[in-house]
Image 1: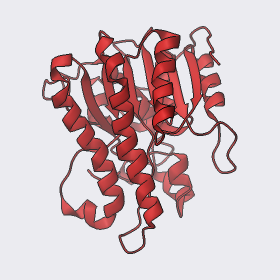
Image 2: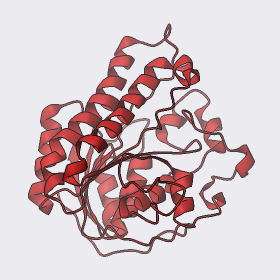
Image 3: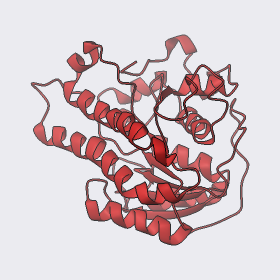
Image 4: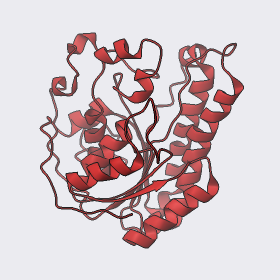
Length: 299
C-alpha cells in the first residue's frame, strides 16, 4: 500500500529548520509509534518519502497504533508512506523492506535504526529470552538493516545512517546498573563507530542520537510506575527535531554538537538543537519544570 498527500504545516516548536528532506527516501525500523513515528512525521512535513517497517500490523492491546495508522499520519503531514509489516530480526523481512523502498521510490537516502527492546533488569533477574531479544533487535537488527541498505545508500548522493543509541560512555556505573541492556545499546553505538570509519570513502554519514532527558514513549509507560515517570519527561518531538537537524546538517559543524566531522558523532538532542539555534527547551516538556525532568541514562 502506497499513500500520498499534500504538505501540511509543521507543529509549533522552537526549532527553525534551515534544511529540508523533501524528496528524500527514509527507511525507518520500528516507526509505528513513539520517537520513530515522530521522526517520520517531521520528515513527512518536508515532503519526504517514508518507508516504515514495524511488527505491528494489527492493533495491540497495550500499544496504540499500527504501521498502517502511522502511514496515514505521514500522509496527513504531507509525505508519501509505504507501510511494511516486518521484523528486524528476520533477514527476509529486512531484505524485502530494502527492496520495496528501492522499487517504490527509486532508492534509499537515509536509514534510521529506531527499533529497540529494553529490559533494565540486573544480571541475576534478567530472563535470557529477554537478553536474546535485546541482542537480536538492538544489535543484530541495527547491523542487518544497515548492511542490507548499503548498496542503495552508496547510490544516493546523500546517504546517511542515523541510529538511536547512546554515546559510548565506559563509566562502569551503567554496566553495573543494567548490564544486559547496556551491552545491547552499546552494540548499536559500536555499529555507528565502525560504519562511520568503514564508509568514509563512500561518503555515507553515520551518526547516533540520544536524548538528554527521559522521553514519553509506550516502552516507558509500560514499565513499572511508567505513568508516573513520564510526568517528568519530554515529548518525542524534541528527538524528531534533533533528528531532522542531524539529517539536514543544520549548522552542526559550526556548533558545539560536532567536532566538524559529518560522521561518527554521538549527538544528544539538546546539543544538536542548540547548534541549530534553539535556546529554550521548555516547549518540549510535558509540563514538568526543566529542573524536575528526569535525565536519561548513559550520559
